[in-house]
Every structure is written in structure tokens, then in C-alpha cells.
Image (cartoon, rainbow, N blue to C red; front, side, top):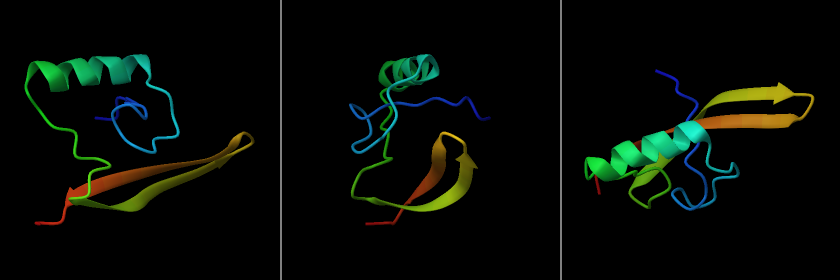
Length: 69
């Protein structure tokens, strides 16, 4: 599912996007279920999986994975 949920820089260090309404909902699910957002943590490595160039600039998406450390 692509909920287009942007969690924002308070949750993901370096996130260039402000938290979206769907990001607020996702963050609520994370908190209520004692989950951890590992995106942006040192234990993850990411690869740009989507690059979209528009008239307003370039938007990149990254899927992170745990590196096993």
C-alpha cells in the first residue's frame, strides 16, 4: 500500500517533507502499537527506489532495510 504518509523530520532525521495528515495517522499507529520507525536510523541502509522529476523539482523515495547489525 502506498499511503503517501510523510512522517517528517521530527520522526525521520533529514526528511525534507513536513509531516502529512497520513503521516500523522501512521505515527499514531506506530505509537499505539509500540513500533519503531527504523527509517533514518544507523542500523538501516537505503536505496533510492523511485525518482520522479516534476516541474517543481525532484522527488525521491527510499526503501530501507535492516543491515543485520
